[in-house]
Image (cartoon, rainbow, N blue to C red; front, side, top):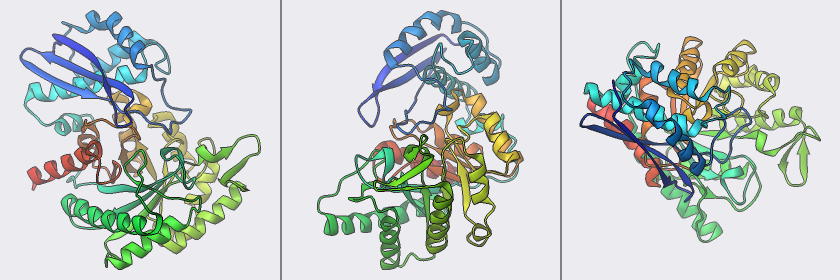
Length: 403
């Protein structure tokens, strides 16, 4: 496939900050793709260029991308990586490389007259019938996603219902009840980066108690489970080797482990993401090995720990640190490297959760990625902001077409 023209534009994301959009054309076929950007970013993620510099870098390589017959995604991504020539994409930047990589996938799929997920699945080792992912709705935003509130970053509900459309409807009902509760108890509702409510206090347990109350009030006891993204690196003090879970309470990793045990047992937590700081593979493993988790079937998920990186996930698997992994293309910088990491997870029976970022665009690329990879879950935020809803609605669209 030959690319005839590429344009890189600067657009605004959901936080009103600048990000990149690529428009790519071959013959009379034109596609576009954009990339999000996270606020809670780990040390292991690829280097990101500021948008203005990224555009200038692109102009230096643009002519080298045009008119070449790329045979497939690996060929195209490999060419970009050669042009960059650094380990962490320090020359061109992971955001520029990724937006080009995503646009190439869309262009290749459209040229062949197939869906994006059908193109992506060619590179995946997923076998068997695909089913829609569980939806992880972040309804209370904390940590770096909020100007105030608990240090735990995401309080999520995960509907346990039949089909993505019913899942979305269930989340909307739950969120309406939650907003009504917050307005009555705390006054005017305020929202965080991912469209979830802001909780006025640092109590890390109370949001789950409120979830429980709403679930019972709406008679959704068997239809909704809870999940957490602790994002523990964000409240870890490296000098003290303590976790500042509360402003006046620093806890050791062993004390934090006990806190998680109580939360998991009391609220039957479905999954817990990044429970410890991003270098502590051992503590992840200790949590994953607990007998209490076998009873609740709680999944320990790596995000900052693994950063969608093949080698880091390999290490986590060897150390039995996780049984679930977050997949974010922005962490690694190309679609092909993302797919390679997904294959490693699939082959080792690690549950895959494809995730958005805290600052999003209206691109629904990750929904097709979740479907292609037969992901266990899709995280896209609250069931309200448009940039979140397009991801959920795309899964519903694919599911309807397949049924």
